[in-house]
Each structure stands twice: as structure tokens, then as C-alpha cells.
Length: 202
View 1 (tube, rainbow, N blue to C red):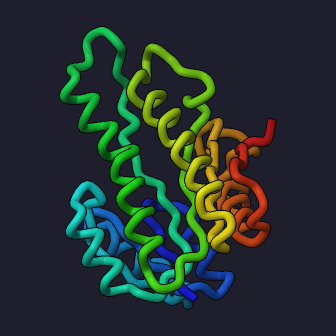
View 2 (cartoon, rainbow, N blue to C red):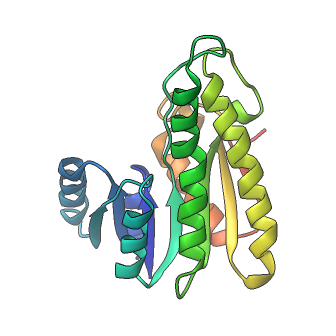
View 3 (cartoon, rainbow, N blue to C red):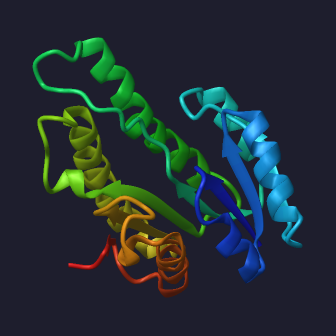
């Protein structure tokens, strides 16, 4: 089996489980370094340089990797902004990366040969918006709506969609240790029974 990882966390955990890991990001230098670190631990890892904002690049990715059975979407612009001074064009760009590109990735993945699992990284900002991270909160709220709707839409087809609602910063505190976060993603993939998973749990 293979796992398609969009973002930077959890590939080690899935690789140790026996999955072939495909890392996807824009920065090839970082991808090469991360691939080397993981293959050095005996894991099977490859990578693709892809900007998820570019439909054709995503299309090429899934045309090349036709046997992906898991996608983890962990892409987002998290820079602070505010509701008064952030230009509408900047809001549009962030919403496109954080939400619209996720929709594109999910739709293209569902059209592949063996779609089985999609995990989307959400955030507590969807529940607790802040004037200091206005567009991020908007993005996470929209992403939550999409993920839950997608979960219901594909449930009868055997595809599992889960929303991982992160309510803290990875590495800050024992509940948000990288090991616990990675384990939660792996548990969600194995259990396949919750539309939304909260980290830490409420």
C-alpha cells in the first residue's frame, strides 16, 4: 500500500506501519533531505515536487501514482492577519491554498483507481476564531464544512474521510507531542469511524 502525504508530519509513523510513503511539497531540497532521513531508517519513501495550487501538477501526480490508498492533506497558510487591514486579494490567495486546493486534491484523488482514505488537517480556529488570525479561522471553518460534507458523500462507497481538528501547536505540551499527534492520525486511518477527531480530545 502507499500513503500520499501532503505536508510534513507523520510519514515516519505510516512508514513504520509498512506503507510506502510519498512526500509531496513545493521545496525539493527539503523533500530530498526528508526522504534521505526516512530511507536511512529503512523506510520506503519517494517524493513529488507539487504546488497544490496548480491543478495540472496535482493531475500529473495522481496520473503517475495510481495505487495511492491514503491521502493526508496538511497544507495551509497560517500567517497572522486581521479583519480590517488584510487586502481582499490576500484573503482570496490564502483561501485558495487552504480550502480550494484541498477540494481539488480530494476530487482528483477520488477519481483514481483505489481511493480509500482521506485525512484533512483542520484546526481549533474553526471553533474559536480570532481577530489575529482572521483568514486562518475562515479557512478552517470552510475546510471543516467541506470535510464533513465529503465524509457523508462518500461514506456508502467505502471511502473514509476524516477531519483532524488540531487544537494546539505540535510540540507544545505532552498532549501535542509529535508522537501523540502522529499516533492519532494512524489510529484514525485504522479505525475509520469518526468524521471529526479532536486533538487534544475535548
